[in-house]
Image (cartoon, rainbow, N blue to C red; front, side, top):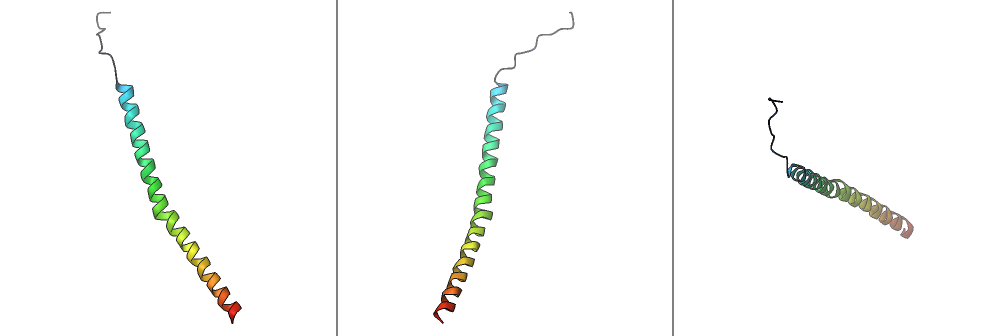
Length: 65
């Protein structure tokens, strides 16, 4: 037992790590969500809406002719 030394208690490490992990996860999640929404989803929806708008205009033109 002569080689046993006292270690200082680990206090606050779990809380600090948990806060860091949660803030990192939330930050990355929100960033990826914004990228997906504005970089992928909205352009695809606009393209789809433009396609159907053109298709409807074409059909209306054919019916009126």
